Image 1 (tube, rainbow, N blue to C red):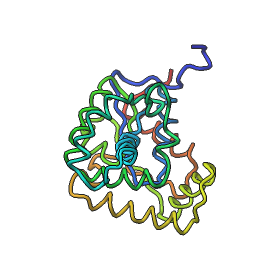
Image 2 (image 1 turned 120 degrees about the vertical axis):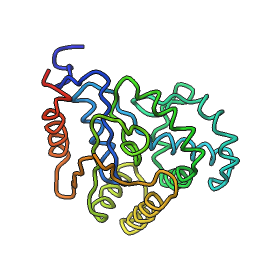
Image 3 (image 1 turned 90 degrees about the vertical axis):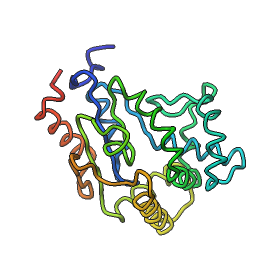
Length: 235
């Protein structure tokens, strides 16, 4: 690694950074940038649930059939590798397939299943043990409750829908902004009202509303907070 490739900050040993928030809050992009700055792997837990939903669809399993999903789960986990770059199956990164809207809807249903979440919890904790930036919807409350740094990112519903719609446009999807707004609103409701591990801000998390902030401003704010807490220092 050249000097120019070195991370900007050095984290304390085993630093776990939890980044939670609703769909479209920018947590995936921001988690990646923070991870790059501090030299830690970034892990998107949403991709795990998308992979399970995707696998169910590929196997013609109804995504509201918890028993069938659980019967499929162990085999699915054995076929894939969850890496900082995403989900890899048979040596192929399948992130693009997992980003489709029908897969997102399936993932939201799968994520509401308590036994599925319980099984995936161990996978997430094992990989985070040596330090990472992990983003999702229940990282600070359930997955990594002892994380040294917790952030909850949010933005207005319309801004989150606009961001998601722009992302879909870049991927070549033909979807209207109104349809995207509806999907985001429905996902918010499902995530917040599910009985097991609902989306909510951890009591000790720092909330950042990014509605009017640039991505770099959010990242700088998070790094400044961690520096003040002596969780990172300049390299």
